Length: 255
Ligand code: SF4
Image (cartoon, rainbow, N blue to C red; front, side, top):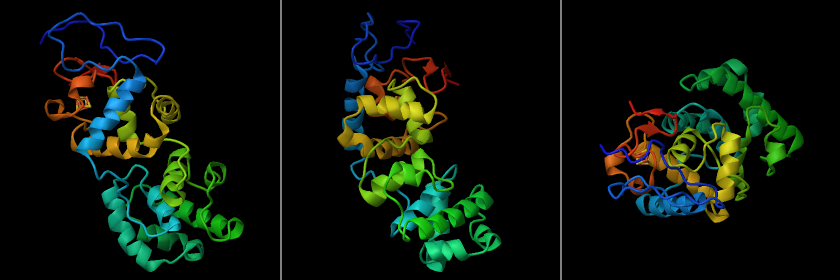
């Protein structure tokens, strides 16, 4: 492998152009000059690769969406969908979740991670929805994040898919990892990554970006051993294994 520079290039903020890397052999793995341009090419290429990209949780109303998203924390969507297939048959509406016993709901959820805590969150959130929101899931970030078990990420998903309100970018573990690999952010915490992405991604792409990065994270840019040799972003990705020794997601050498 030819090492052209000891530093892996990442796109700079829009006002600061990337200094050119003088190396004729370095064709792959070179990001666009600014982070906005980098974000645009990422969205374009992933939209072409995953034209049907969308949320993979199953639900038929806002309460079910909220419950599915709460259950999906540190759990696969596939597992959540298999549990909610029965759950959504058994319970109908926030009143029934709020009224059920903690032990019974926990038992219904026992193949999901942290099922005891999640059962409690669901019961308490549904009680608040009944008591303070006339049985409907609220439609503001502040009201949603007052519900037990609901942070900014969950609230963003519910706003986008339950209310058609896009006021942020959902940052899950795939978005966190791949945004760093692509040089779109150098932040570690989801809230800061979201703020960086909101500055450089056009707002009409905020919702799609999450699902595109999740699809890419499942198909190609996996946490361990991503398949850079078969990646539509390889040409612009500063972590691309053929050119970079460093995984920018971790800052560590590729293993
Ligand atoms: S698979 Fe490799 S080239 Fe593609 S985005 Fe991930 S790290 Fe970059």
